[in-house]
Length: 354
Image (cartoon, rainbow, N blue to C red; front, side):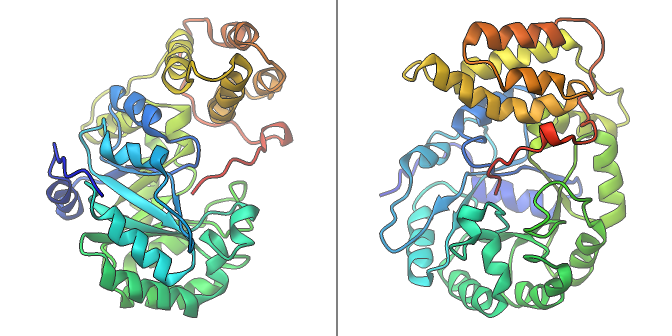
């Protein structure tokens, strides 16, 4: 059963965010990346207003993943937590939603956007976008079962955004408390342009607040997306991993303050701190290095434009070699805005993001 330890009133905090005037800044759920140690680290850099868990896989025989559950029971952020589920079996989703509400969660979220083939081939995540009627049935059952806030994270469609016309009325019908829209289809993954005009339509047509998601990698881009879409806030994933100062930079810009821009050395220190935070001493050095490569895939996109940094990082196998490459590219005092350079084939790596 859940641990009824609530150091923060998550429901009240989340309600204030939804009804407030400042844009809501959410950390996106990214499987095997935005875990409890990473949340703790992000908080030290200013952090998000609300944190989404990695998704709980839901099926007939599923149990709550204890590792992901720790993000809720040991929440180090002082901010509301939204528990995300992924699956398609209605009785199992209802059961899991009820179990999650035994814990200190501000909301329960249904993932309708994960573009990983291993997920969508099972008709879960983004795969459900091929079956709007099934989504309708799932949302109806979950809206009845979820007594806290109920939210959805979606993409525009599976292989075409045309289905978005059918999806929006379904979302509106089920009294969602918040909708997050990633402005791409499942098939577009992360490499196409983001279709912000569809997010704008969601903002105009939905009775609940809408968060914009996709390619927000700077305070400037954040301001542009908020202006273009009229969204109630932003969900940021890769941009925050690349630049942990991003949430605070967005707040600085809104207050009219000069933006903090880290130097190469400060980015290097972030990578060192990240290594210490997310790499368990219980696993081998090679496994630790492999885990760091997952994070560096995002950081590296803002280090330099040729792809050489990532090319070298992907070929190291020891901690010493890993930091040798990092020091070669980052041990300097020049400012590093950490905005992403245009993608190259070398950078186009798939990481499961919810």
